[in-house]
Image (cartoon, rainbow over all chains, first blue to last red; front, side, top):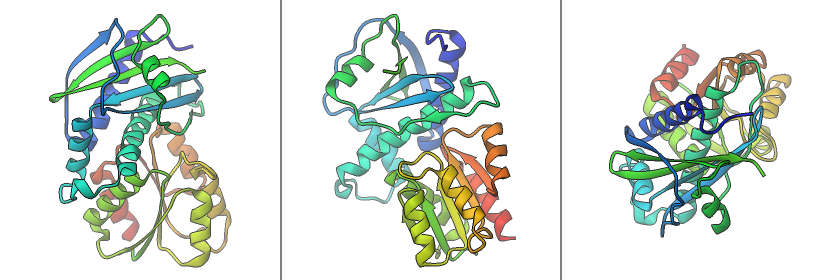
Length: 159
Length: 124
């Protein structure tokens, strides 16, 4: 059973987030903070969650701002006309970022010689988003300042 | 130089990123065929020939694990080199995939340098 507030777990999560955004956008984490109070849903933000099913069962949720996503995307595709990119591609991109963070996190926290099973990323409902942004005894919500952008990642038990 | 590459990943943006990196690291001029899962990739293999497969692991319908096993079990396809790109790559997974015939395992986010090393090594 993973203790979501265990320092080693939070360190692994930070490394997963850091490696992902450094790899995608050469962006660094400037600040990390455990959030103790609910965060309001952000208009236009991109969110995704993924269920990790083995050897641990938990959900990893991520929220990033529209501007942050566009900046990351344009970093990968500097020559692309962003206005011509279909919405589904941006939705898919945030799913892929969440998938990358989740897989990397899992590989850091899980004991070796254990099979890792990761679900597919899911576009969350408003209820899922609210749950993801509400810290509790069972839900750990972490804020990261990545360059100038706010990123929220939470861990909670799988349903 | 690889001329026909089968790129397998359920994520459209992942396919776009990997394709772009492959073109940067020495596969410019290659023809790419994209498949969203292992099942679609098997269908693509039946319709055309490829000299490189780059595949994700975590996909719906048929995941990369099953796809890899089928490719390596087939006398027709088992000589095609396979690069695995996985979000959950660790040493044990890597050994597992190599045991089933993968040539390289690269974790996500993909490092262009590691991809370059893999491509260069496979082309030699």
